[in-house]
Image 1 (cartoon, rainbow, N blue to C red):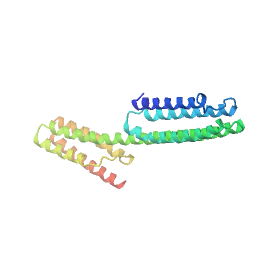
Image 2 (cartoon, rainbow, N blue to C red):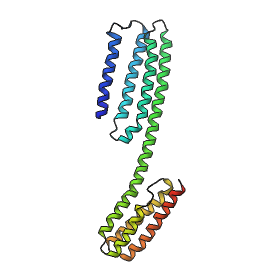
Image 3 (cartoon, one colour):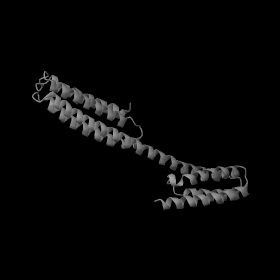
Image 4 (tube, helix red, strand yellow):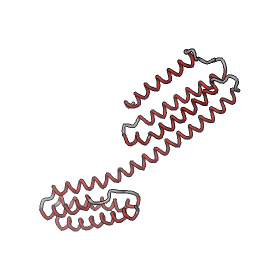
Length: 230
């Protein structure tokens, strides 16, 4: 349970307690004999619990980015809560209205908003997964750039060091954007870099130079593909 949700839970508990005091204890208490009262009360309690569940889902994330995505769920849950609170309150304070009508209205409102919450959760999940996938692909290019820089310091000769610097500069100024259109070439670049790294570690200048040319060509080709899909 995150600190944010703990604070929210305290506020929620206070509001729920105040609601029950107004209904059962205060001079404003309502006649609890009618079936409409208990129908309205049941749906209001359901609204409180549903809103709490949505808030738990939204605030359970420690990641600020994912919590930001979940703000839409909090907004939807509040709208659902307020509308259902108003609808159920009409049943709760109206002993004349047939209980069946109040039950049907509250059930329809609850069902509609339950669907909205489920759809919102699904959309948030899809967007979050897409973002994670993009960040993973971006991490690959950043990782290769970092490894290329590290190879400069590992070079055993000035000639190989210069070759490593060229490769590093190519990675450094490459487009980090990644999507399915560059998936294949990303894999080629990763394979070539492994071969290049082995050549540098083995101090094989000729092989390192040949692989570096192929690697730089692939990076340039990738940059061109990224520009074409903008």
